[in-house]
Image 1 (cartoon, rainbow, N blue to C red):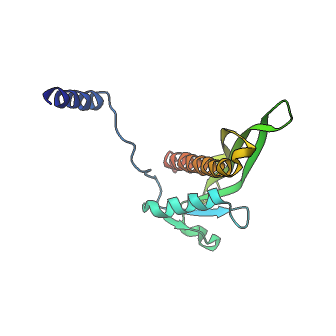
Image 2: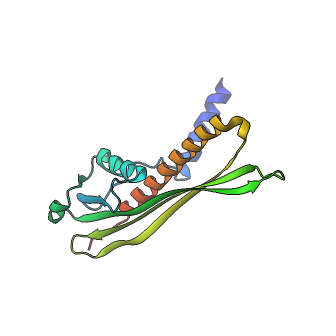
Length: 167
């Protein structure tokens, strides 16, 4: 018992000494953000990004372009896409492996029109095996992988927004 306690205490000390710290929520250098999407209706990643920004609680998120003058920055989602590409087939010509891709293009501008983040694209990809005998479970796995990629993209956009320094 003492050995476990000693080991736990040593581990905690080692982690704190190396600078380990759990990443907190994103903090932004601006108070208000206009969010718009070039596609109508916005895609699922754009909607998740909007929900995440609203739930963050640090920003006043505005979606009405008429109120652009009240904001400090404008996040424009220029497009998003999901792709499913065959990367492996069997000798019988049946699909054995897919590569799933999720893309989000965006830019951030100040209210004066200055690019804070130039036109950027974030791409996530995952490989998935495929079997016709397990088509239903593979469909569910594909949905989970797309959700995972979507979460990663949203987190990457948030980190880029947090790095913006307003002029």
